[in-house]
Image (cartoon, rainbow, N blue to C red; front, side, top):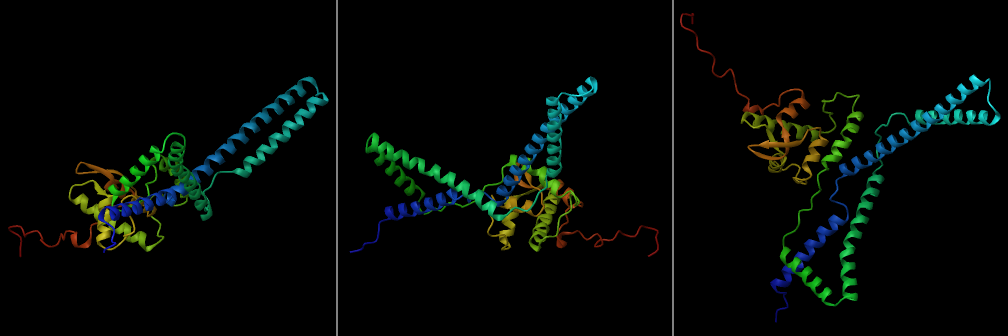
Length: 314
């Protein structure tokens, strides 16, 4: 007699496993990219620095204003009473203290971030998400205890139905794109860190970046020749996958990889279809020259020399 489980049980078990893997991926904070975590840390540090500078400037201004007022009174009255003299000295000390603090703070600079800070921030996200996941379970337990056992039954049937519906279709474990508002808030910080370099110069920091730039440049040049204003990221990634490159990336994580290589991305309209991609104009500004075609597509202007005009010697 066969003990092999039936198709219903097999489908439900596979669906439960797929849902469990997805929930573990989400609850562990793995949907948040390292780039987003780094940008959030930089943003928090920049905001804290700006707040500290503003606080010291405000207190320094208040102390200097008070000291100036007391000096003017002393000049008009020929001196100050002991209590006012003590207030003047205190105000001068406060003003100097805040001035020294402002000088120590200086301009905010982007420094290297300890990988432990990124890990700690991801763990905080994971702790919050795990708490969120426990709320439905706790609600079912409390409902079954206080109301009726039907709550537990209905919840169990709902979970089993969800597992069966998912079946043997695993989730795509993606990383969400960096939020546009975060990119906008930290774009100035990134620019400040690169002020000593030319704004449009691509840094030679690795072969993969040069190869990726070459691929994108050629694909965008081909698109321009076909009358298109750019190429969608999903199409660029598909071409790389066909070459066996960047196979670990998905359409959700690829735009961040492009930005890591210094390639600008934005919403591009290609034949009326709008999606994240690389536009011809933006890439031209970044490269400081028009994107080049592959060698085999460059037209040979010497293949058909102009005919000799009538009357000229041959």
